[in-house]
Image (tube, rainbow, N blue to C red; front, side, top):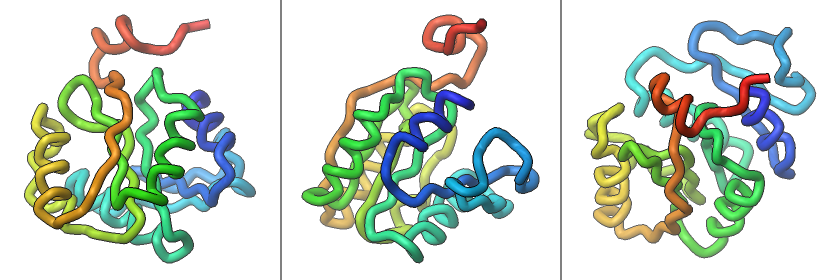
Amino acid sequence: MAFTRDIALSIETERFLFYSDYVNYNDDWPNEFFTKGQQPNGDLGTRITKAFETAFHYNNKVVIIGSDCASLTTKIVQTAFDKLDHHDFVIGPAMDGGYYLLGMNKFLPQVFENINWSTETVFAETTDIIKFLGCSFFQLPTLSDIDFEEDWEKYGWEIS
């Protein structure tokens, strides 16, 4: 998670961090650089929707990243923000059929409705909804996220 934190800190933007169980103000994510909150109950779509909704109260471009992509770079995240100047959405597909990054320049919660979360069809379903809404999107490089031990062994971070 330090890897993801360092990437987030390298981007000049307001940063939000949403916890699944409780908000930890005494962890390695500096309170002065991250606005912290708790995820609501519900499926992944509900939790992502709330994160975007919260961030859009403060920003006109929002990018959400997971903490499980060892190949993510500052350049990719910065590209996502930059592409939102010309596209409604930006999306980084994951090798497993999901995505590791999603950004938008206006809050459209419909993009999270009727998605079969945690399946190999999440990316395709999401981009179909974006197209149905008449919106444009920029596709980032396909990367691997870490869901299983095999993923860690193949794509994970070095253990020191």
